[in-house]
Image (cartoon, rainbow, N blue to C red; front, side, top):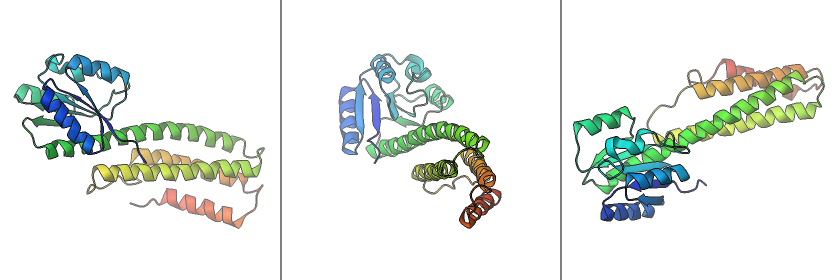
Length: 240
């Protein structure tokens, strides 16, 4: 089960800040509060967050300084901006910085909550894709090594390593699809043919097929031959 999402709210209106934080905590979020841009910037440099909700007009946030250059570990953090003084200038700056939402005070809490849920889902997809990319790089290297040494390694080691990585890849794919569905329940997910992340998985499966092909002489098995054919079919004729 995923840990509660951690949010940072920055606003110099104390009553609004505390009441909004309490309402979000009732929704299951962990919420930290900052009274100005300087305090928020310090907190962003010290801890990882899933979402930033920030007022525009507050000390320490001239020209949207808070979101100009978000520090690690929050470089790609989704941001919701709020203001009681909407202007075309700040709206344009928000768009140019790919801000998730631009909300005008006073606002309905439900409107904020909808955007918070959207931002948290987006953040979790970002992190899952990053972690997935690192795993795929590691797995691809391992698969290449197995293929290069398939003739000298014990068959059980070759097949166990290959099938284990394939199983983990399928679980990873399912997790990403589930996260995507949570973000946009009615949206069409990418197909195997044109999704960049799934293209990486496709290459990994192709390497697995190559290992099976190289080990077929050392380990005769109709079941393994059937598995190889099924994998080849899945790669060559992916579902839409």
